Image (cartoon, rainbow, N blue to C red; front, side, top):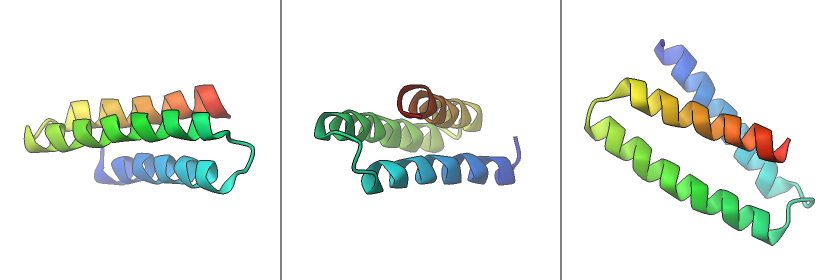
Length: 73
């Protein structure tokens, strides 16, 4: 996967998260679930970056985007 593709995944995740923050149809409970999952993702991405494991970094980032789309689109 190229750096451009990774940047696109990051942008997709950002767009989804911005929608959650701006969209009043999300309940507080849903926002808390998303916040908690984002916290886990942030720790995982930092770990995989430190381990220089780009494949796992990409996997976890893709998984987050897929999870958001599956559960909240």
